Image 1 (cartoon, one colour):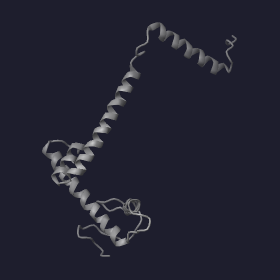
Image 2: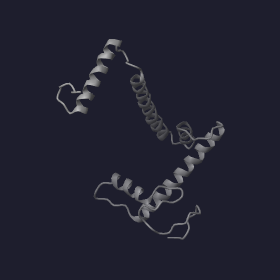
Image 3: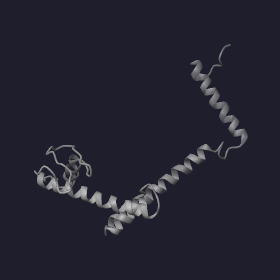
Image 4: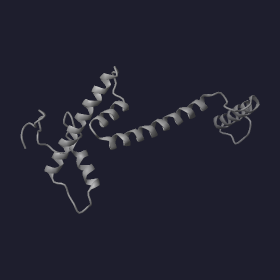
Length: 157
């Protein structure tokens, strides 16, 4: 191995979970490769090192394009839309479509969660005042039983 890669990042020759400034840890790359290969095939260290460099370069390109898209919109935070635009600009339309699909599912899940929280925060929801009072009294009775350690007997004063 050479002491420095072409991109100017020093490679100290260690393996394992050493992360470069731009890439994923080598152990993560090795794990991903191992999960995708049949059990009878192994990836050599040179192949893993090459894949590591490729992922670092891919992440650098996408990040750079997403940053440009972010700057063009006058924003200070890179969003999902910026990353998808970067993937499309780099001709990774399939990845962009998959990311957009995943993002849409995540947004739907977040919207459903917000609705559930909103319903919980509404006082009483669809209950009448009498039903709310009955529920409150039942909760107080349950709490009183737990505090007294009794099995339904009223607390003695």
